[in-house]
Length: 245
Image (cartoon, rainbow, N blue to C red; front, top):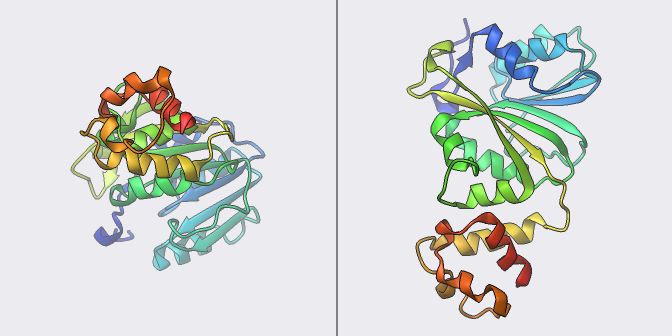
Protein backbone atom coordinates (compact mmCIF):
# COMPACT_ATOMS: atom_id res chain seq x y z
CA UNK A 1 0.00 0.00 0.00
CA UNK A 2 1.20 3.53 -0.81
CA UNK A 3 2.37 5.35 2.33
CA UNK A 4 0.63 8.76 2.59
CA UNK A 5 2.81 11.83 3.06
CA UNK A 6 1.88 13.95 6.05
CA UNK A 7 3.69 16.94 4.50
CA UNK A 8 1.19 16.92 1.60
CA UNK A 9 -1.86 16.36 3.83
CA UNK A 10 -2.61 13.04 2.16
CA UNK A 11 -5.63 11.12 3.49
CA UNK A 12 -7.01 8.53 1.09
CA UNK A 13 -10.73 7.81 0.93
CA UNK A 14 -11.17 4.03 1.03
CA UNK A 15 -14.95 3.59 0.89
CA UNK A 16 -16.01 2.90 -2.72
CA UNK A 17 -19.67 3.54 -1.95
CA UNK A 18 -18.86 7.08 -0.80
CA UNK A 19 -16.62 7.61 -3.85
CA UNK A 20 -19.53 6.54 -6.04
CA UNK A 21 -21.92 8.84 -4.15
CA UNK A 22 -19.60 11.83 -4.63
CA UNK A 23 -19.12 11.25 -8.35
CA UNK A 24 -22.84 10.85 -9.00
CA UNK A 25 -23.58 14.33 -7.64
CA UNK A 26 -23.15 15.59 -11.19
CA UNK A 27 -24.03 14.32 -14.63
CA UNK A 28 -20.59 13.72 -16.14
CA UNK A 29 -21.30 11.53 -19.15
CA UNK A 30 -19.42 12.97 -22.17
CA UNK A 31 -18.25 15.95 -20.06
CA UNK A 32 -14.70 17.17 -19.44
CA UNK A 33 -13.53 16.56 -15.89
CA UNK A 34 -10.61 17.78 -13.79
CA UNK A 35 -9.63 15.99 -10.60
CA UNK A 36 -7.18 17.64 -8.23
CA UNK A 37 -5.22 15.29 -6.00
CA UNK A 38 -6.53 11.94 -7.33
CA UNK A 39 -4.24 9.97 -5.01
CA UNK A 40 -4.45 6.29 -5.93
CA UNK A 41 -7.44 6.87 -8.22
CA UNK A 42 -10.36 5.76 -6.03
CA UNK A 43 -12.65 8.59 -7.19
CA UNK A 44 -11.08 8.54 -10.66
CA UNK A 45 -12.19 4.92 -11.12
CA UNK A 46 -15.79 5.88 -10.36
CA UNK A 47 -15.65 8.86 -12.72
CA UNK A 48 -14.43 6.65 -15.57
CA UNK A 49 -17.36 4.26 -15.07
CA UNK A 50 -19.71 7.14 -15.95
CA UNK A 51 -18.02 7.69 -19.33
CA UNK A 52 -16.65 11.23 -19.29
CA UNK A 53 -15.33 12.71 -22.53
CA UNK A 54 -11.96 13.42 -20.93
CA UNK A 55 -10.51 13.54 -17.42
CA UNK A 56 -7.47 15.59 -16.47
CA UNK A 57 -5.68 14.52 -13.28
CA UNK A 58 -3.43 16.95 -11.41
CA UNK A 59 -1.18 15.17 -8.93
CA UNK A 60 1.73 16.86 -7.12
CA UNK A 61 3.28 13.71 -5.64
CA UNK A 62 5.70 12.19 -8.17
CA UNK A 63 5.23 8.64 -6.82
CA UNK A 64 1.46 8.88 -7.14
CA UNK A 65 1.87 10.44 -10.58
CA UNK A 66 3.91 7.42 -11.68
CA UNK A 67 1.37 5.04 -10.11
CA UNK A 68 -1.49 6.77 -11.96
CA UNK A 69 0.41 6.77 -15.25
CA UNK A 70 0.84 3.01 -14.99
CA UNK A 71 -2.75 2.42 -13.85
CA UNK A 72 -4.37 4.42 -16.68
CA UNK A 73 -1.83 3.95 -19.47
CA UNK A 74 -4.45 2.26 -21.66
CA UNK A 75 -7.07 4.97 -21.07
CA UNK A 76 -6.87 7.43 -23.98
CA UNK A 77 -9.22 9.91 -22.30
CA UNK A 78 -7.07 10.27 -19.16
CA UNK A 79 -4.41 13.01 -19.09
CA UNK A 80 -2.15 13.26 -16.04
CA UNK A 81 -0.04 16.22 -14.90
CA UNK A 82 2.63 16.06 -12.22
CA UNK A 83 1.96 19.59 -11.03
CA UNK A 84 1.02 21.71 -8.05
CA UNK A 85 -2.69 22.47 -8.51
CA UNK A 86 -2.21 25.91 -6.92
CA UNK A 87 0.04 26.91 -9.83
CA UNK A 88 -1.83 25.13 -12.61
CA UNK A 89 -3.29 27.27 -15.40
CA UNK A 90 -7.00 26.47 -15.82
CA UNK A 91 -7.64 29.16 -18.46
CA UNK A 92 -7.32 26.72 -21.34
CA UNK A 93 -10.38 24.82 -20.08
CA UNK A 94 -14.08 25.68 -20.23
CA UNK A 95 -17.32 24.13 -18.94
CA UNK A 96 -15.33 21.87 -16.64
CA UNK A 97 -16.66 19.77 -13.75
CA UNK A 98 -14.00 19.71 -11.06
CA UNK A 99 -13.62 17.16 -8.26
CA UNK A 100 -11.14 17.34 -5.43
CA UNK A 101 -10.41 15.88 -2.02
CA UNK A 102 -8.44 18.93 -0.90
CA UNK A 103 -5.66 18.72 1.68
CA UNK A 104 -7.07 20.67 4.61
CA UNK A 105 -4.00 22.89 4.87
CA UNK A 106 -4.54 24.44 1.42
CA UNK A 107 -8.35 24.49 1.26
CA UNK A 108 -8.86 28.27 1.54
CA UNK A 109 -5.98 29.06 -0.81
CA UNK A 110 -7.17 26.51 -3.39
CA UNK A 111 -10.76 27.73 -3.40
CA UNK A 112 -9.59 31.35 -3.74
CA UNK A 113 -7.45 30.25 -6.66
CA UNK A 114 -10.35 28.48 -8.38
CA UNK A 115 -12.74 31.39 -7.89
CA UNK A 116 -10.61 33.71 -10.00
CA UNK A 117 -11.11 31.52 -13.09
CA UNK A 118 -14.39 32.95 -14.28
CA UNK A 119 -16.29 31.04 -17.00
CA UNK A 120 -14.04 27.99 -16.60
CA UNK A 121 -16.02 25.71 -14.32
CA UNK A 122 -19.53 24.39 -14.74
CA UNK A 123 -19.40 22.93 -11.26
CA UNK A 124 -16.87 22.46 -8.44
CA UNK A 125 -17.31 19.48 -6.10
CA UNK A 126 -15.02 19.51 -3.08
CA UNK A 127 -14.31 17.46 0.00
CA UNK A 128 -13.34 19.83 2.82
CA UNK A 129 -13.05 19.80 6.60
CA UNK A 130 -16.52 19.81 8.17
CA UNK A 131 -15.75 22.89 10.27
CA UNK A 132 -14.58 24.73 7.16
CA UNK A 133 -17.78 23.85 5.28
CA UNK A 134 -19.82 25.37 8.11
CA UNK A 135 -17.69 28.51 8.06
CA UNK A 136 -18.35 29.26 4.38
CA UNK A 137 -21.97 28.04 4.29
CA UNK A 138 -23.81 31.33 3.82
CA UNK A 139 -27.14 29.57 4.42
CA UNK A 140 -26.05 28.55 7.91
CA UNK A 141 -23.29 30.83 9.19
CA UNK A 142 -24.57 34.23 10.35
CA UNK A 143 -21.15 35.87 10.59
CA UNK A 144 -19.66 36.96 7.29
CA UNK A 145 -16.03 36.48 6.24
CA UNK A 146 -13.99 37.15 3.13
CA UNK A 147 -14.22 33.70 1.54
CA UNK A 148 -17.89 33.30 2.40
CA UNK A 149 -18.60 36.71 0.82
CA UNK A 150 -16.70 35.87 -2.39
CA UNK A 151 -18.31 32.45 -2.71
CA UNK A 152 -21.82 33.77 -2.17
CA UNK A 153 -21.25 36.66 -4.58
CA UNK A 154 -20.08 34.46 -7.43
CA UNK A 155 -21.47 30.97 -6.74
CA UNK A 156 -24.43 28.97 -5.56
CA UNK A 157 -23.27 27.01 -2.50
CA UNK A 158 -24.72 23.53 -1.88
CA UNK A 159 -23.91 21.44 1.17
CA UNK A 160 -24.27 17.76 0.27
CA UNK A 161 -23.29 15.45 3.14
CA UNK A 162 -20.75 14.75 5.88
CA UNK A 163 -18.17 11.95 5.83
CA UNK A 164 -16.82 10.23 8.93
CA UNK A 165 -13.06 10.25 9.47
CA UNK A 166 -13.23 6.46 9.85
CA UNK A 167 -13.30 5.83 6.09
CA UNK A 168 -9.88 7.39 5.41
CA UNK A 169 -6.31 6.12 5.56
CA UNK A 170 -4.66 7.43 7.59
CA UNK A 171 -7.61 8.51 9.73
CA UNK A 172 -7.70 12.32 10.11
CA UNK A 173 -8.65 13.92 13.41
CA UNK A 174 -11.76 15.57 11.94
CA UNK A 175 -14.77 14.68 9.82
CA UNK A 176 -15.20 15.94 6.27
CA UNK A 177 -18.01 17.44 4.21
CA UNK A 178 -18.86 17.39 0.52
CA UNK A 179 -19.83 20.77 -0.91
CA UNK A 180 -20.67 21.99 -4.39
CA UNK A 181 -20.05 25.41 -5.91
CA UNK A 182 -22.02 26.27 -9.02
CA UNK A 183 -20.79 29.49 -10.67
CA UNK A 184 -23.46 32.12 -11.29
CA UNK A 185 -21.48 33.49 -14.27
CA UNK A 186 -22.45 37.01 -13.24
CA UNK A 187 -19.69 38.70 -15.21
CA UNK A 188 -20.85 42.13 -14.11
CA UNK A 189 -19.05 41.30 -10.85
CA UNK A 190 -15.41 41.25 -11.87
CA UNK A 191 -13.59 38.96 -9.46
CA UNK A 192 -10.35 40.95 -9.28
CA UNK A 193 -12.19 44.11 -8.21
CA UNK A 194 -14.47 42.16 -5.89
CA UNK A 195 -11.47 40.51 -4.23
CA UNK A 196 -9.76 43.90 -3.67
CA UNK A 197 -12.96 45.16 -2.03
CA UNK A 198 -13.14 42.03 0.14
CA UNK A 199 -9.50 42.40 1.20
CA UNK A 200 -10.22 45.94 2.32
CA UNK A 201 -13.56 45.38 3.99
CA UNK A 202 -12.55 42.25 5.93
CA UNK A 203 -9.04 43.32 6.92
CA UNK A 204 -10.58 44.89 10.02
CA UNK A 205 -13.85 42.98 10.12
CA UNK A 206 -14.76 44.13 13.64
CA UNK A 207 -14.41 47.80 12.80
CA UNK A 208 -17.43 49.75 11.62
CA UNK A 209 -17.51 50.03 7.85
CA UNK A 210 -17.61 53.83 8.25
CA UNK A 211 -14.02 53.64 9.56
CA UNK A 212 -12.90 51.44 6.66
CA UNK A 213 -14.56 53.38 3.83
CA UNK A 214 -14.26 56.83 5.41
CA UNK A 215 -12.59 58.42 2.37
CA UNK A 216 -15.07 56.97 -0.12
CA UNK A 217 -18.31 58.66 -1.13
CA UNK A 218 -21.34 56.44 -0.60
CA UNK A 219 -24.87 56.89 -1.96
CA UNK A 220 -27.24 58.45 0.57
CA UNK A 221 -29.61 55.48 0.62
CA UNK A 222 -26.72 53.23 1.71
CA UNK A 223 -25.19 55.41 4.43
CA UNK A 224 -27.00 53.47 7.17
CA UNK A 225 -24.96 50.38 6.21
CA UNK A 226 -21.78 52.13 7.34
CA UNK A 227 -22.82 51.64 10.97
CA UNK A 228 -22.32 47.88 10.68
CA UNK A 229 -19.18 45.80 11.02
CA UNK A 230 -18.31 43.83 7.87
CA UNK A 231 -18.74 40.48 9.66
CA UNK A 232 -22.27 41.50 10.71
CA UNK A 233 -23.57 42.62 7.33
CA UNK A 234 -25.07 40.39 4.65
CA UNK A 235 -23.36 39.72 1.35
CA UNK A 236 -26.34 41.30 -0.40
CA UNK A 237 -25.76 44.59 1.40
CA UNK A 238 -21.99 44.43 0.97
CA UNK A 239 -22.56 44.08 -2.78
CA UNK A 240 -24.72 47.20 -2.69
CA UNK A 241 -21.76 49.07 -1.19
CA UNK A 242 -19.37 47.50 -3.69
CA UNK A 243 -21.55 48.54 -6.63
CA UNK A 244 -21.90 52.08 -5.30
CA UNK A 245 -18.16 52.73 -5.14
